Length: 615
Image (spheres, rainbow, N blue to C red):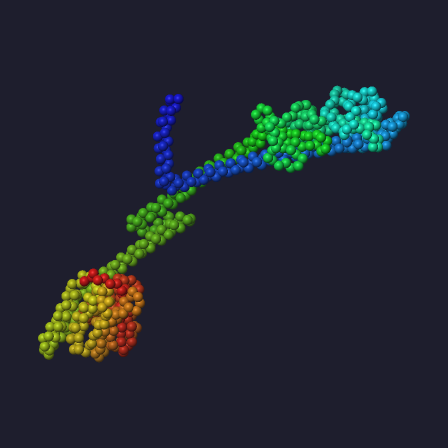
């Protein structure tokens, strides 16, 4: 015992370690969980199927066995009852024949006896059950005369003084079949028979004037049982005349048939006359008994067998079911292994491709594009890699273009033509005007050049952009000698809205150079702001110059209008529009509306966002 306890204590850590290992595997591996679930489900389904099948099989087998036994008993009982009924008709016919009454009442009964014998012999030969008839005897109430017919009855005649050996002729009640006995007048050996004695009455008389004795061979019972399937366990019994017999080896053995602790069975018989009970055999075993009456003869056939015989009958089927269950379990394991391999390999390859994409390698892998569900995932992953690569290239290109546009602002050189015109204007003003105008234009120019030189942010408040534009307007008004009028009408509520730097100056410059100067040189440039749609600010730069056609507008947006003769050589309409969309999105930007000979409007659309922290 000590060794066993020590072994148990030694095995506990191993069992615990195995349990923890299984838990870790099931927790960390989808394949392991899938295999475990598949095998568990297969095992559970197998056990459920086996259990349900066994219960159902036991119920069906039990019902089939009971129905088969009941059917066989009922069939044998019907065959036995048919033969006995034929013989009963012969007995009843003999008791009511006129020849019988003449024989019993005539003083000289020799001739009536001869006539009765002839009639009985004729009836006997026509009876279908003659093979089972052993003796039919008609005698008077004093047993002094008799007429006998039957098989071999003439070889061993029954004398009147020996009739008492056939039975009790004093009973005048209804006829009752006796138990199995031996014919005392058999020719050879002891032949088993069963018999019945019935009284013969004259009219309504109470007392009998004679008796009819009918002896039947037990073959009437054994012959129908020739094809009966006797069970190896249990027994077949016949109860007649209050005595029970066990049918064995084509014979009868008298037994005491008693059912201990008998109670009705739960099974429903096919025939209403059949009785099914369960009982103890007196040795602790449970038995079933199926009883079927033999018509109205009072005979009862009973088949007994152990209750466990049903289980013995289904053991072969149980073995077959167990083999099927083992096969199903093995098949489940094989399916689990197959599914594990079919899923694990694609998952590893897909995982490898996803890791490659995460590492920056967007090269599609054609291996993962199988012709199944995983192949669909693989194709989507490859498409994702292509889309990500295209997106990265697009974003890099956009950033590159954005920086290029910004660098054009930062790196653009001051146009010599503009400086020449501005300086000439200053020289002209110095000749014809007072020093105040020269000072104002010089200050505006210095502020404008300082704004260009100190650009360090791409987005500024609208107020700063308007201040830069006002310096440009001051220079332009002096340059054109007052022939150009400028207006700025922007509500204070919009001054904190952000806008890319140098957005309005190229538009105003374009209005002067291409709109007014290209015509009469006289006109008006106005700047206004409004918010027609909630959240969208529109800033309009308008001139009343020569206008533009659609082709000229398209050339401006495509950057094909040549170098700008104004402040910046590389900053034009296309630059402004592209920077607006890069900064705020494709739904924003620049729109130009123009009517040749009348006006041109450049409309800047930006989101209305107040960022007061910008300088």
